[in-house]
Amino acid sequence: MDIFTQQLVNGLVLGSIYALVALGYTMVYGILELINFAHGEVTMIGAMVALSVIGVLAGVAPDLPGVLVVLGGILVAIPACMLLAFGIEKIAYRPLRKAPRLAPLITAIGVSIILQNLAMLIWGRQYVSFPEILPTTKFEFLGAHISLLQIAIVVLALTIMAGLWLLVEKTRLGRAMRATAQSREVAELMGVNVDRVISATFIIGAAIAVIAGVMVSAYYGLAHYYMGFMLGLKAFSAAVLGGIGNIAGAMLGGLLLGVIEALGAGYIGDITGGFLGSHYQDVFAFFVLIGVLVFRPSGLLGERVANRA
Amino acid sequence: MSLLMAQGIKISYGGIHAVRGIDFEVAKGELVCLIGANGAGKSSTLKGLLGLVSHSGDLRFNGERLTGLATHAIVARGLALVPEGRGIFGRLTVAENLDMGAYLRRDRDGIKADRTRAYELFPRLAERNKQLAGTLSGGEQQMLAIARALMGRPSLLLLDEPSMGLAPLMVRKIYETIARIAQEGVTLLVVEQNAHLALQISQRAYVMESGVIRLSGPSHALARDPQIRAAYLGD
Ligand SMILES: Nc1ncnc2c1ncn2[C@@H]1O[C@H](COP(=O)(O)OP(=O)(O)OP(=O)(O)O)[C@@H](O)[C@H]1O
Ligand SMILES: [Mg+2]
Image (cartoon, rainbow over all chains, first blue to last red; front, side, top):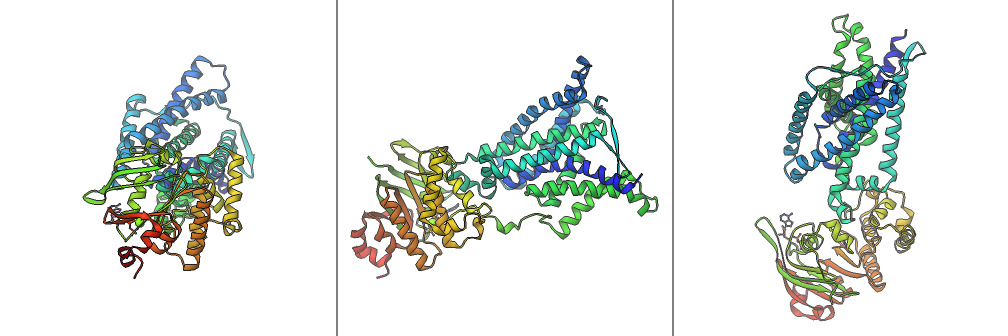
């Protein structure tokens, strides 16, 4: 088996998940210049809700194909998390719109702690495992094993990214989002209901996050009330890597971070002469984050801040 | 009945009283200007009309009270403001900026016709319609801002210092266009520091000083007023 190809594949899979979560960070930052630290937790809640529904569905309808069961879980979790994100923005962030920037940031951290604890109360401290209902077909490709699930994750993620790109670039709502990101005041002068556009941004980000949350729990076979923390931090790093506020940047940053991490994990043992094992893979995200912040704070595709109209 | 009727409008920022109770009106079809020195409260007045800053007093548009409405709701009622500094969306293309002007409209054919008209009015914009608006020159940006506001077919168009920062030739061009827009039946309220220009093109004018209206009347009369000539026309 070829480690390089295998890790590249694994990295692309993880990276597409990071990219999906990163989109939520970057869209909100683009419009409000707020780092919505609660976004990782929304992703976690999405996974948890979906998993609960999946568990119930798999129990009452054992003959239903696994894909449909998972789809059912997603279809319940998406509106639930859309509502959650809408509520978070409206209750926690909107009243602070004119406050100094530190206030909403701290609020975001608070919201994320609340959501984590809420999830712990509802689902407990134990891992919730993902039932083995999805096909486990594997293919050989250039010396790497690729599962059907991995292919599905990457294809679905890329489709969602393409859809979001179309939404932002080609639709009336997307144009209003871009206008609002540049100047809320002028967008209002065009007749845009900026509050609604901001709500829409949170809601869209949450829907995408749910799918990412289900992907990651299907991939690792489990979900946990704490999973949103690390996933959120990595997705945030990916958004910063790509240039926070930039949608294409979040996609690129996510994929890149996934690949860096997987390759790093694959070779870290060789590099350190066996001193560090592959369970250190998490450190790479933070090396990348620190590296970007030091050498290119605007990120790979980030715009010059002075360019804001 | 006046299209716009303002009575006792006051605007303050914390302890700073920028507008201290002013009355003015604009009738349908008029071109009215509001002149005054730096800090007189002109921009604040326009922002108050659009609900960008809160005001007290009685503000009526087509007889309906505007006080307390959100900006987008006021825009939906037919008011448009080209803000000081133009406020174009630099990272949107020229064409997308125009589309934003028509954001509240759903009549595709009408929008298309108005876009064609905007390009007729400002041929320079037509040549640059796929360009990012941030790359336009100051004068072109002012053209775009006016064209964009017209895309919403406002019944009252407010312009805040359209000549600001422009070379004399471009100022003339912009003012020719404003006169043309007025001739075509658009009602305008223009804020201007360049009193000379403003009194030339407008029918009536208000002169604002430290948050109050000092003088008002027909523009040609104001242009001959010795007080005005001394303070604003540099005599
Ligand atoms: N956001 C604000 N916060 C505090 N004070 C403000 C604010 N905006 C305006 N002011 C004050 O209100 C007064 C009127 O300002 P305004 O911008 O309305 O004047 P203006 O007549 O448009 O002047 P200019 O011709 O220079 O544009 C000024 O003293 C200004 O300092
Ligand atoms: Mg001003």
